[in-house]
Length: 115
Image (cartoon, rainbow, N blue to C red; front, side, top):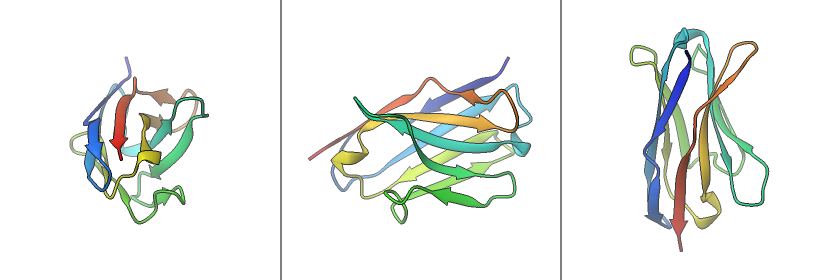
């Protein structure tokens, strides 16, 4: 059974930092493209960042230079370091694992940035 378990969300003031983690089980983690997505109230889920098995990364324009995605294949874990947070980053953040079909999602972790 595939599980993606996110952690690290919370409440932070604008300008602060958070580090999200997503621990995966039930998949061959090293071959999967891992990603972070987010969904703010009343908005569609959007891509935040992805990292492929070889380590190449991709970021949404809105987070480039502030967020860093990384992975530890030995720990089956993907991370999202979020710096210089602003209120527009408030959302539920979801971990995603994609290789073929189906793709997998975590349950989400809330990030709230106060002004």
